[in-house]
Length: 216
Ligand SMILES: Cc1ncc(COP(=O)(O)OP(=O)(O)O)c(N)n1
Ligand SMILES: Cc1ncsc1CCOP(=O)(O)O
Ligand SMILES: [Mg+2]
Image (cartoon, rainbow, N blue to C red; front, side, top):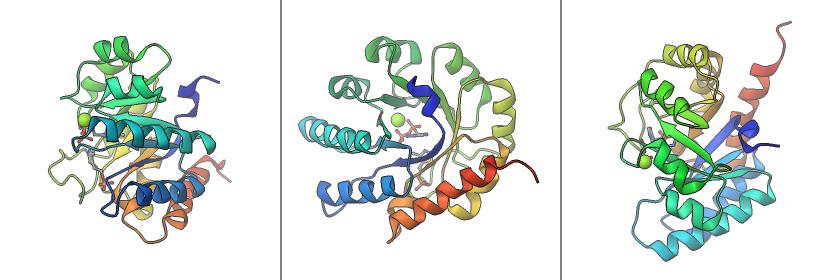
């Protein structure tokens, strides 16, 4: 099955764990047990060899759970470990160059902030999904530009590729984003900042099941 067919559901984005990488692996395992479908390795700290070994370990863990691993920012790292894909923003290179680096099978996700024209261009250039947000105040990236929820509905009407929502998402506000058109919810603090990660992810995952039920 093409990897892009799997781009739906809960998308967990990692952050470095203060207790070290083993603690992060345990957190990701708990998230996968709760139904996470896609994991993104997001680590902006220096250390090429460390980032390579950590992302390779996460790739193996994700595949044990039939989930995908996407690498943030770094197409070279994604390619070198054979990750499922890469996520790029406005500072991480244009989509065509990234495609040339990662090859035709890899997933490319592109940040489009609050701008639909960026998403239309990204789709045309070969992106496999686009991301909008932040939609709510974010503890992880408070400076991120704010997007209006209606943008998700407009995006679903204009695009053929999946649409991801990001920024301050919780189980309480996530359903609104899915109803507006989000195919995936990308979450950092709402997953990795809580004590019971598996329960939290189950709660998030149920939002997608509810939205798929036919209207009674
Ligand atoms: C799924 C997803 N959406 C958006 C982002 C943000 O990407 P970017 O704008 O490049 O910012 P950084 O994450 O690199 O700080 C993302 N990483 N993932
Ligand atoms: C990377 C990024 N880009 C826009 S908001 C954000 C952070 C999302 O993290 P959180 O789910 O903790 O708000
Ligand atoms: Mg980036």
